[in-house]
Image 1 (cartoon, rainbow, N blue to C red):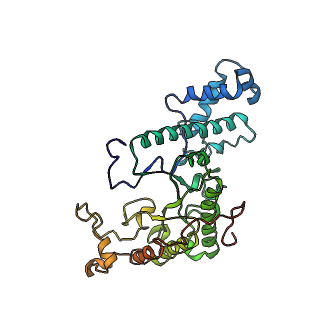
Image 2: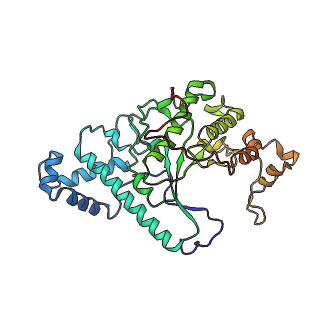
Image 3: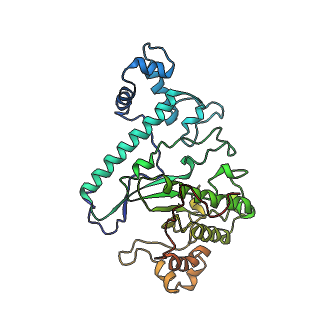
Length: 354
C-alpha cells in the first residue's frame, strides 16, 4: 500500500492505529511471549518462582490461555453480568499483586511497540512526503479508571500502548475524546451535561490533562492533535443537549486547549439518524444535505460555508456548529497561540480541576 500510494497528494498522514489497544493471541504471539519470558527470567524455574506456581504439565499454557481468553472475550469469565463485555478490560480480573498478570501487560506493551515500529519502518521506506501518526482513545487512557458507574462491572481495560516509546518514531499523536464518554466523571452514562456545569468543567479539565500528560511523557517535542471529538445532541437519551450546547462544547474546548493541542477534528460531517452511536446527531450538517464524490468538488457544501452562499433551501440543514465553522477556522488557523506551552516538571492545568 505504501508503495502504491506514496505520492498520493490526497493523503495527509498514515495512521498506524486508531484508538490504539494491544491485543494478544494471534499467530506467533505465543512464541514471542515465550521468548520475552526467557529474556526476562532466563528459565522456567525463575518464572515459576516469580509467579508463585509449581512447574507441572501445561502450567504456562494455563496462564497464556487465561489472559488471552479474557482479553478476546472467547471465555466465560464474565458471568456476573451474564454477557460478554463490550470493551477489553483484562484488569477487571482484579488480580491485585499478580506478577503473572503484570508480566502479561508488560509483554503486551513490548510486543505492540515492536509491531508499530515495524509497520512505521515499512511505511517510511517508501513514503517521504506524508506524516505518520497514532491515535489514543479516552477509555483506555491511564488517567481514567471506570469505577463502574456505567455498569461495566469493573475498570476499563489497560491499553498496553507505550506511547513514550512510540513517540520516538511517529510525527504526531492524536487523542479521541467525547464529553459523554467519561463515565467516571458523570453520575450516569447519559448524564445531561448541558445542565450540569460542574461536570462540564471537569470534562474540559480532564481533556486538558490528557493532552498535557502526553506532552510530559514523550521522548521528544511532539505535536498533539485532538483528533476526534464532538457533542451528541438532538434525540433519545441526548434530547436535552441542543445544537447550542454542541457549539459551546466545541468552542470552549478549542479555546481552553489551544496551548496544548495543535489542531482539532470534529467527527463527522453529517448527522446519521440511523446510527446507533454518537454519529447520529453530533455533526455540523443535518441529515438532509447531500455530500457527493464530485471530482471537481469533494466537499460540495464547504464552498458555500466559506463564501456565505449556502442556498436558502439547504441553509436550515447547516447546524449551529456548521455555521460557526468558518469563523473558528479563521480564528485558529496559523494562530501563534495554538502551541504547547511546557510547564516546569509538571502537568500544569489552566484552571482548577473541580
